[in-house]
Image 1 (cartoon, helix red, strand yellow):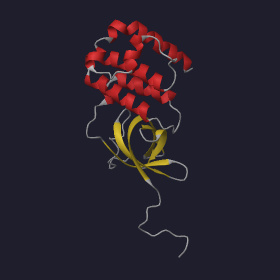
Image 2 (cartoon, one colour):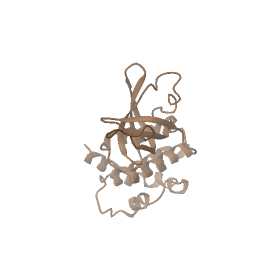
Image 3 (tube, helix red, strand yellow):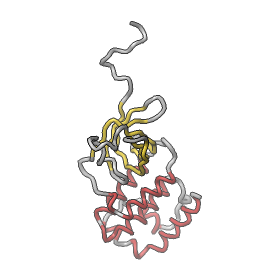
Image 4 (tube, one colour):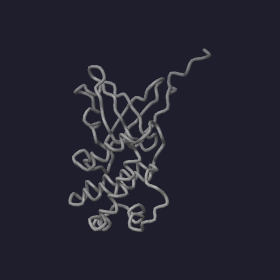
Length: 199
C-alpha cells in the first residue's frame, strides 16, 4: 500500500553521542526528563521513559553529573532516550565538587541545541583533570572555566596578556596546573570579568 513504511524500516534516525547529565527532573510516576550536554547536538532536554522503574537498566547510568554514551531519537516534539551506557574510559565526575561547579555553570550558559563540540572537548578535558588530579582540582576548575568562557566568546579579544594566553592554549595537565597558583590573580581577574559579561 502506498503511504506506509515497511515494517522493518526504522521510523526515526538514532543519534549516539557522548553526553554529560547536567540535571534530571521527575516526569510522571516512573519517567524523567534529562538536561544533557551532548557533543554532537549541544544542550538538549530528553525524555527517559520508565527510567525510575527499578528494573530499568538506565536507572543508575543516567545520574546527575555522569558522563555517558547516550542514544537519542527525535520524536515529533521531544528527544527521547533509547539507550545509555558508561564510556570505556570515564571518571566519576559527580564525586568532584569542582566538576559539579563546572557543569552547573555550563548549564546556565549554553543555548539549547547549539552545536558546540569544541566547548564539549574543553569541558571534558577539564573535568578529567579535576578528577585525575585531586590536589590540583581547584586549579583545574579555574583553567577550565577560563577556557570555556573563551570558547563561548565571553573573554575579550584579543588577549594581550601572555600569561592568560598560555592557559587558553594549553591542556590542563599536571605541569600546567602546577603554575596556576603563581598566576592565579591574573586568571581570576579575566574569569571574573568574563562572568560579569554573562549576566
